[in-house]
Length: 142
Image (cartoon, rainbow, N blue to C red; front, side):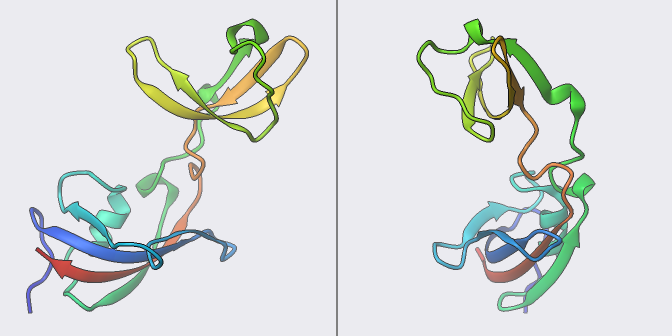
């Protein structure tokens, strides 16, 4: 049977868990995830785990933070004045916002702290700094 290799378009089902066992994402209730191996479309550790799998095979792997979303970075905590936030926007710690960069790109951020004068936003990926465990089933190689 064929083994998945760089350049192959693959379909996988997966369930992702944090170290405490909490499920943070799963494709089991939707269409399989599709991507091309070697193109960097998914986190590096996930891509490496799929390499060499055969259709129908299931594998459980733990991916370190470095091979997932990287370590948490303090330089991605950004304090801005309340006057730089859209007027009338009700803010709460933990709230997800979108930040438009000067080049026009939009990135997701989280409100990390609030004072009367400032808003601290966190531009780290929500899973940064986390080791992740995935159960991966290779559904098909196209």
